Length: 212
Image 1 (cartoon, rainbow, N blue to C red):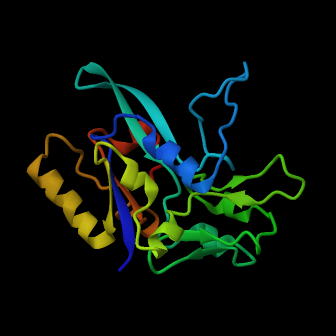
Image 2 (image 1 turned 180 degrees about the vertical axis):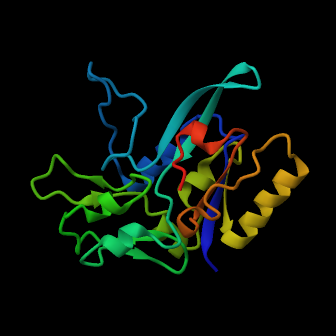
């Protein structure tokens, strides 16, 4: 059965533990992200940052609110990046992750053009650059372990499990607390469904999620 993650943004506190865990597991270095040479929260994906926490300032229920969102590869059920790749460097597995075969990649970047979520990142600083992105910890899953971001989250905002069961869990939460959530599970049907699904207290468009 296909695995997935349910990310409940009402529980996310923006601590970036998932972001740090991703870097540690994949041995990704920190990167300078400001003009004065300091290390700050990366504003977008790069070949060194596969998970990003976005900070959204909103007027919510007539008061100012911060709403945080974990963003990464969506691991689509029918990924456009896989369809666009001319050398089969990207592969959708039956278990859920969209994995990447660096030894096949020719750096054409067709996957970047195809991805509706602007996820694949190119190694611009390399002479023969390749593509980098989240793998949903496919290596950990193969060893019977959870993706490290889900294991690390201190508030339970990220739940890992069977996709169908997580969809039912999301529906149950919305039915039990309709005032706490918009009636929309992002990723249930977008682009044919994704392995990363979200719940939120505000419309997803307000958080920068594309309407697909």
